[in-house]
Each structure stands twice: as structure tokens, then as C-alpha cells.
Length: 224
Image (tube, rainbow, N blue to C red; front, side, top):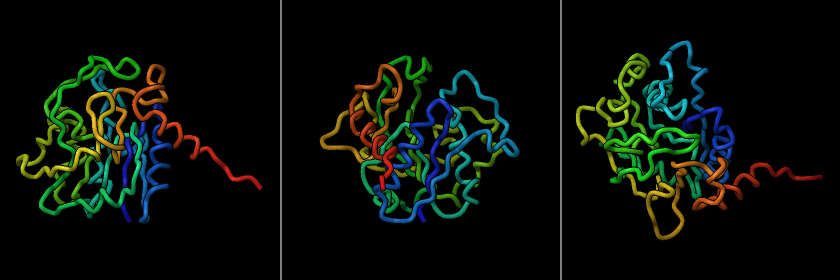
């Protein structure tokens, strides 16, 4: 079973469902998909959302190892994404030498504002944490108490690990940033980081046609 956790925000509910559909449609293996709904965690996680958090899952993503019982491997991804291939291909890249694996982008965000007027925070390792494969038994530092109190930079820059040698690199195709990079061929995991096609002003962004096609497939019901 491949365990997948997807960030959830009421402002992007449709994004979660389309991404989940694209994962299920392409997968060759059983997949367990869990939405990280912040209000569902109120009995063990009470961090108040600040003005710096563009989504409800800015920090809840780091609760994945806890929610997985600190056992096995789990995948986290933002909801504003689209899977175009078998998620088993990503899962096969896991390496026990690392505590966490991600695409290690080397870029500076070009815009100061992104979807819904959210501030585009610029920092080292930007977007590394938008797709993470957690080797859960090596991430026991990530308790609800720590995630509730530590700073964004501490969490998103992996300072909860002893050093960066425990962060493994994934190929760029597993977190392609629309509007921030280019690639030959269709990426395996498309990330609409500046704004999804479901938001005004982004209907015609790169790969929006693939997102809308997936939405149509999700909404389809066989007749008769």
C-alpha cells in the first residue's frame, strides 16, 4: 500500500479531488489517500494560522510521520498538483539512506504575490517541502508539539534533521513548478505553485488543459 497525504484547504477543495483522481487513475498499486484537513486534527494540533501561511497545510504537512505512526514510508504533496503517471514510479525511488526525499529546486520565486493575493515568501529551499517522501521512522523529531511551535524556516528548511545529508534528491520531473521552470516533455508531477487553473487569472497557464481534462474525467459518470 502506498500512503499518500495531500494538503487540504477549503479554498482549493477542487484541487484536492482532481489530484486524488489523477493519482488513482494512473496507479498500478493500491493507494491510500488522506487529506490533511487541519480542523480534523484539533485534538492534538492547535497552531493558529498566521498571515505568512498561504494555505491551511503550510505546517500540517510535517505531521505526516506522526499520522503514519512513524513507520514505513509516506508521500506528502500539495493539493495544487496533477499526477500524469504511475505514483508507484515515485515510490520506487525511496532510499533508506535518507530521512526524507524531495526535489531540490535551486531558484528564487519571480513573483511577490501568488494565488488569492497570498504573499510569495522567498527563502532557501523554496518548494522543497511541497513534495516529500518521508522515511517515517527517521522523522520522530516531528511531533505535534514541535510542529505547533517551531518557525516556518525551521520546518521547511529541514532544520529538524541533524544535517542536509539526510535529505535525498528526487528528479525534477516529480515537482515541476509551472511558471518557474521549463522541461522537455510532460512532467510526471505538475505543480501549479503560482495558482491553479481553477483560480481566476490562471485558466490558461501551462498544462491547464491537462488539469481541466482530468477534472472532466473525474466528473464523468457512466450512463445506463
